[in-house]
Image (cartoon, rainbow, N blue to C red):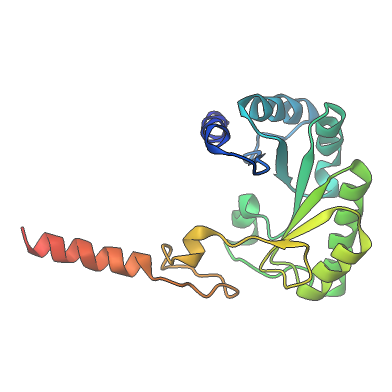
Length: 191
């Protein structure tokens, strides 16, 4: 939490007119009380909303955050904070009927609680489109197809700084990691 507060404060000092949100880190919203306490810390640092991963299972926390007057953004589909629970694999969610129904149920729960937006990460495009059409919140896609209201592209993915993993939906415009490695090797040889 201390690092997120620090980074949020730095971003708040630098922003001009962008909407500034901050993610609640893993295990920083295990209870409604903890979720509100940590959300307030992020707001005091300059966040205008907070985001947390999960759907119906975090509904008490979401309701508590919103009841405290803090705008909330949800995150459904592939949940990076929980990737190890899924064997460390990035998988598209909602490919089968059970997955689709869970995503729709979680989206309905977040809509009922008052989330103003939901990030859809690695959600089957047809399901992402269905969620976008059905619910009143804005959807922001990360590898979830063109039917979301907005899109995120992670800078590290765009410039190829993680050579051990490039999401299938990303076409890096640069191979920075390879170029950096070559520069370091060349420099080392010149010593």
